[in-house]
Image 1 (cartoon, rainbow, N blue to C red):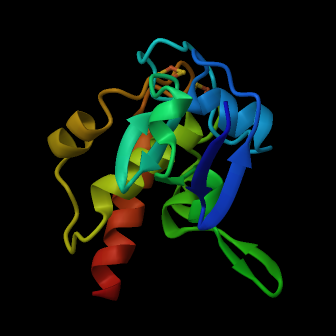
Image 2: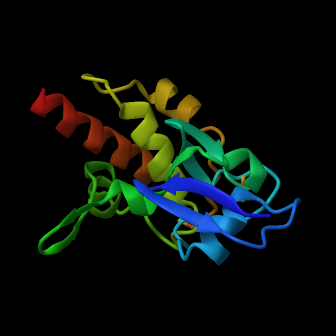
Image 3: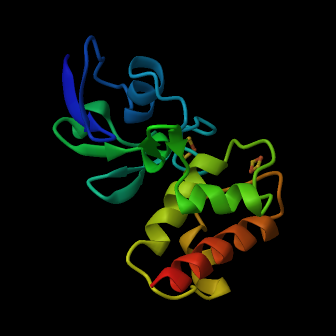
Length: 162
Ligand code: FES
Ligand code: FES
C-alpha cells in the first residue's frame, strides 16, 4: 500500500508498505531517517520515540497505516536548518554539553521525550518529574545522572530565556 504523511514539515510518500510494517521501519528504511533507533521493537525502551501530531509515541508500535495523513517529527526534525547547516535544538545541545551521550542508542528517544517535557514550560522540572517523564526511555550506558544533568541544563537555559 501507499502511505502519505508529513515528516519534519515535508510531505513524504512511501510505496509498497506491507500491512504489518511499523512507522519506525518506514522512517528508517524507506524515508532515509535513521535517527529514531530500533532497540526492542516492543514498546519497552523508548529509543524509537517520535512526535505524531505533537504527541510523543513509540514509532515501533505505530502501524504505518495509522500514520497516514499525520504529522510526524523525528529527532532529525528538531534541529533547525540554517544557511550554515544544521543548528542543534537546545535540548540536543544540552545532551552534548552534559556528556549525556555514550553509545547514543537511547539518545534520540530521550531527546524527543525531553523536548516534549519542556515544551511550553518556563520552569525547571523537579527530579521526580523528569524521572517520571523519561521512565519509558531506557539507557544501558549512562546511569541516568548525565541525562538528568542534560534535562536540567536545557530547562534552566529555557527558563533564563523567558
Ligand atoms: S524500539 Fe520502540 S520502544 Fe524500543
Ligand atoms: S547512551 Fe547507550 S543506551 Fe544510553
